[in-house]
Image (cartoon, rainbow, N blue to C red; front, side):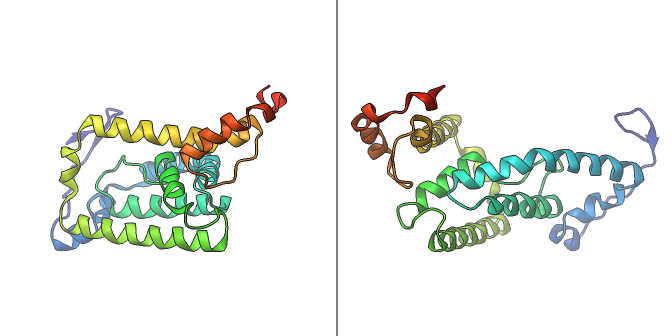
Length: 202
């Protein structure tokens, strides 16, 4: 007998194995689903959806996309990650770092929010998915363990700086075109210092 967290015994069950389970990992935990776990998962899913709804819209805005694309990005990876992911507890979906990386990569090539920009982002998303699928099939996920903590900190700090720079025009109420490079944003901030609207800082 096994004991769950609540202390109630549940019968041991045979975990499926074989090539089919390797192709469809959700078959490994599917036998554990029952009425109680389904109810708990449903409650967790509703709670997560309420949290992700405003986050998805914010992530889409940061990436320079219409708000509905943030909802698409929040729904589809969650379903795919739950069925084909390697962890029961891993949350899949858009993040601030990915959103600002997409914006920084695509904004020099097209006007954010335009049809051309959306097409470029969708193409980039498809290519990233292809590379991730290829790396996953090649069992190269373990390479992440060799990325040092310093690199992660540097990436996070860089993303934070880019996010702050992208909101300068809204924070100070000055005219800076979307897609302006970071160094140009800093330059325009000093040039237009006299035009800063003090009421937007309240």
